[in-house]
Amino acid sequence: MKKIIISDIHGNLEALNTALEYIDKLDVEKQIVCLGDIVGYGPNPVECMEKTLSITDKICLGNHDYTAINEDLDHKMVWHASEAIKWTRKILDDGMKKRIKDFKVQIEEDNILYAHASPDSPMKWQYITNAKNASSSIAEMKCSLCFVGHSHIPGIYANYELHNEGEKTPLSKNGKTIVNIGSVGQPRDGSPMLSFAVFDDVGWNVEIIRQEYDYQKTMSKIEKAGLPSFLAERLMSGI
Image: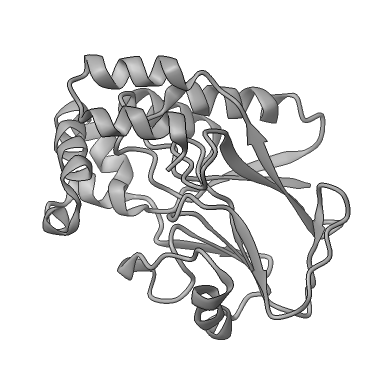
């Protein structure tokens, strides 16, 4: 089976639709897992919630999802993120907020852990962006494999040497690996291309998928919604 792992959609419907078009064309048995942050930043939180809920019931809680229904993290957010989440709270109805309350902090199955930010202390929302800050999380892992998002920067980190085979990276069941799948709706590695992962649980390998999408349409929606202009500009530069 192919496990399709998506994360950090952030109300970006154009990016989500593009990713789902790719996923729909995969003519294999597949299951979608979402690592959270469906909302925040972007102009289509309701549509992205509806679409994600329609394709999977395996959804982790992201920090923006959490803040959309709890105000206790507002003071920790930068201005543009805070303005966007306050706007999002007004857009989401009670039914949507209730569904967010049902999101799991972590999901564990078949020696694989799914989390929004990190496998250790998940509600501290720690970033995994490089081998150094991945190492402490790897040391605490009980599963062989963990998928995360949160940083919006894709990367694969392990306590053993990795060898790419074309576009796929073989993983070891005997070692420990963290795969940061990047972000569907707001990549931050210097590229505007959306990012998600396809994991083969038979061959035990992973591929990071990058795709172009119509970010200019999303930028226009952000501006029309009156959200901070920086949220539109960063989509073009991937920062």
